[in-house]
Length: 277
Image (cartoon, rainbow, N blue to C red; front, top):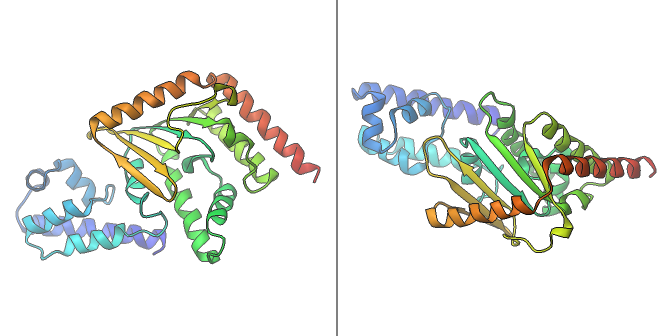
C-alpha cells in the first residue's frame, strides 16, 4: 500500500471512529475512559495523528459494539512491509517520542540516513530482492525521518561508534554525502551527535544498536536490536539499565565539537577518495 493510500485509510479509520462514537452518544473522554486511554488520544485517533494498537481497537469495538471492524482495520494497516516485523512497533513509537537517544555501533541510524545510503544498506541485506521491495524499504526509512523536520520534533541524541565513520557503505561518494548530511543536521542542531572512538575500547551494549525513547504521557521505552531481531523493553528496571549503559557510552564518547570535526574530516576523506577514482 502506497504512503498516500495508507494515510487515507487511517483517515477513514478516524472518521468512522468519530461517527460510531457520536452515534453511541460518547464524548472522546468517555470513550477514552472505557478503553483505557485519554480523551486526547481518541481525538488524535480520529484525526489520524496517532494510530491505535490492535488491543485498543479491540476495546473500542467492544465498547461501541462494532463487530470487530476497528480491530480488523487496525491489524491490516499495521501490517506494513516497509519495516521488518520486529521493528514496526518501534517505528510507530519513534514517531510519538519527545526524546530519542540512539547508539549506533556499525551503521548510521535510520533517521539520519540519506536515500542513497539507505538503498545501499537495504541492498546489502536483500541481495536477491526485486527493485520494488528495495524502494519500498527506502521509502519507509525516508518517511520515518520526516519527524526531524516537524515543529515538535523530538530531542535527538546520537552516539556513533567510529566504525560508522569508516565503513564505506555504498562506496566513497555515497559515504561522503552521508557523513556531510549528518554533519549538517548536527550543525543545525537537529541532532546532537557524539562519536565513540576506537581508543575508548570495550563499551556497554556491544551486541547491537540501542534506542531509548521518552514520551509525554507514557513510560520510557528501550529498543535493542540484534541479528534479524529486535526487542522492545518496557520493564522499568530493564529500561533503567539501558539508560545507565547509554550514560556510560556518553561519558566515553568525544565531546560534540570534537565529534563534529571527526565526522567532517571523515567526509572529506571519502569525497577525496571518490574524486580520484
